[in-house]
Image (tube, rainbow, N blue to C red):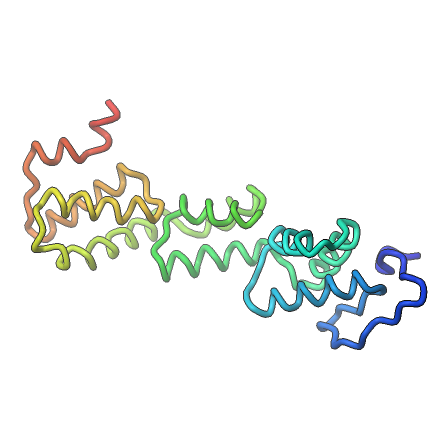
Length: 201
């Protein structure tokens, strides 16, 4: 039996007919067929990492040997590609949600992407792009907070960036610089209270 033959076919089982993905032959046996169909269904909804699919198969009670074989076949034919998955997530969520590298790394780790692949995907997001996005996020919210006390505005805008994964020091610096660009002066005592770099000293 070759490595592509899959786990042993159950005696007497006849697999239901199904359309195969291009380059992916129907695996033999009931659990293999069910695992393949579940993976195709999940991938049809959105891209997923190999770990996410493995977890889904485990929850459905698919034996580990069967799951590994099906996932390996999907990887061989390109239906599973964690590197492409990670790069797409980084690009799309930074553009649409303004997430920083810290938040993006956490999302990829949560989806079971290995550290080396996470690092490679994040390498495509340089510091200049990240800084430009942070400034845009603050700029869009600056006018909307004009009626609030200065301390509240400062805290909320820094919080917006922090929740998106930007380091506290960078978040404060961006907010402070955008205030200056808008002609808003931050009193020295307020600046000291809000500056995380001073708090760490």
